[in-house]
Image 1 (cartoon, rainbow, N blue to C red):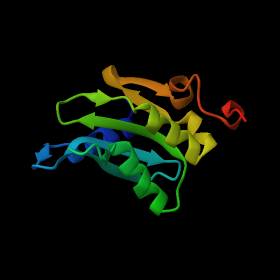
Image 2: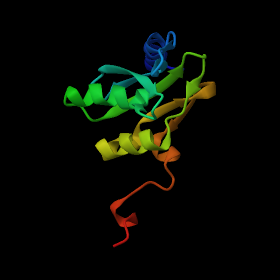
Image 3: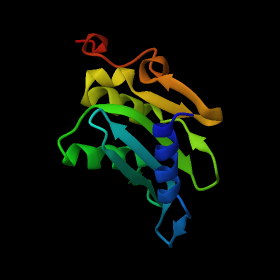
Image 4: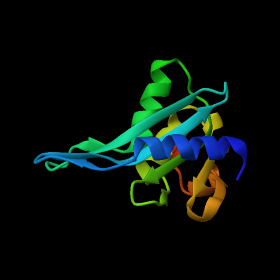
Length: 133
């Protein structure tokens, strides 16, 4: 694991240090950290409400990045308070790609310190051509 991924994993772990639960929601179950092409790190936490509302930690980190006018993600990792690295869900994979086509080259860390490019995780990605008129 390279230095950047070590730093991202540390930051993701800080976000998912414990799960917080109340009668309506849980949050901080998963933490995410990403680094942009400019070297800035953004983090996010998951929110899981009892009424099916919420968001993934990746979405929260990406929102922070977008608030700072950045779109290119160099590397990303999501970590559970249970001690596991999570792969981004399909919705998050598509979001990463859709905010900037260059993000197909984003390096994604998976369990076991495996690193994949986003394009390897999106073999049948949504495109304009896939929309049927």
